[in-house]
Length: 110
Image 1 (cartoon, rainbow, N blue to C red):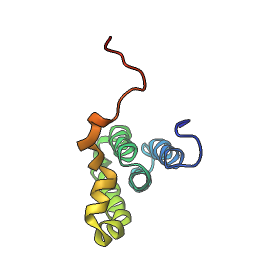
Image 2: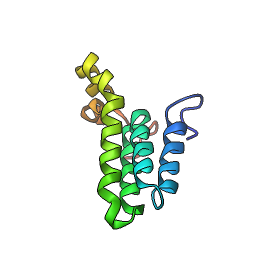
Image 3: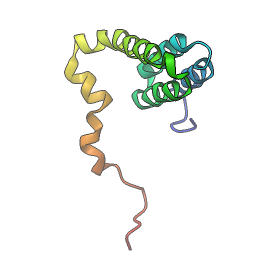
Image 4: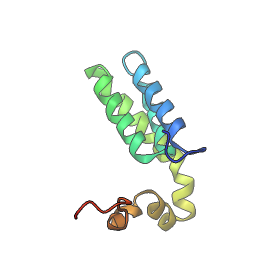
């Protein structure tokens, strides 16, 4: 959470992810909604929260939690996708195509 310094999406996403994990054993549907909200802030943290909710929820109630998470994520991300789908995909997962440009500041292959 300390990088980059200043406001960003990591703290609220982590707060929502931890809240979803705490709620999962007793309130799986609410936990799914909270994990779905975490997806709005950080896609990978939200996906980890959904997976954590899936693991922490009692076996008979897992589908309800996952459906709630996916519906919440779809509803909160829909305005961005409808407005400009290309920009949304580029800003959320498009960086995977340029991972080779992200390097350590010091050479490690002397």
